Length: 309
Image (cartoon, rainbow, N blue to C red; front, side, top):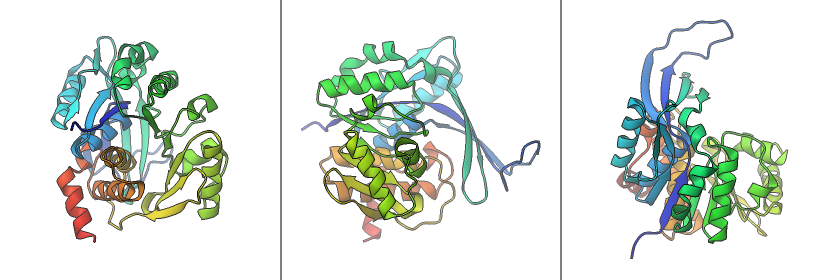
């Protein structure tokens, strides 16, 4: 039997990462101790996580028809991703992210959308059949919002499960939220969407209830090293703790979690084992530097889980 089909719609960036002792203050110039250019972007990171974890995945994205764009597409193919729907755009550069990472593994990021901005509603319409034939659609918010909405509408018409990782944080229309089956915000994004600051279990559940009220069945609030708060509509939520590891940097940890989570769910795992699988993948990712270079392969996640029993 063919594996269930996942479609990810999202961004691809060339990440320029500089490791620094501390983040620069306004007007301050600091020396970094390590620089690397690797491929990132929330959409691509999640696609790579799903592909390496064994998902049957197609990726909807736009790249610049430039050297970086061609290299990014070639890299995605090696990660078991169907890239046939990726379009190379002539007159625009591939997206770029400029990232500082401090000694605590925290990061600050500036992004130029570039070709990601060309993932418009016309693009979504052109590739609508891929969404219609899928079992699940996973999206983030580094693509134009009207395109995210259009893709969700197409998915909903065909009863395709819609998963939204609402990052980077921004306010979202109820029209979009009502089409979402599973949402995976972090604490900052949760506050943007609900007005509730998540500081404990009670506030996490209050925020989840606001999102349930907007029509979302499953709310998974990611809490960094603490784990996640999982709440299904009409039932009390609970925390699922993360694995304890020493973090090198947290770039792509949330993306790895999302890609791995949906892969496990499409394989038929129930929610709790799927979250633990995703926690394991994210735990491995934070022990490594960079975005996509940090994303583990399936055998690594399985080995980690076996050794953690």
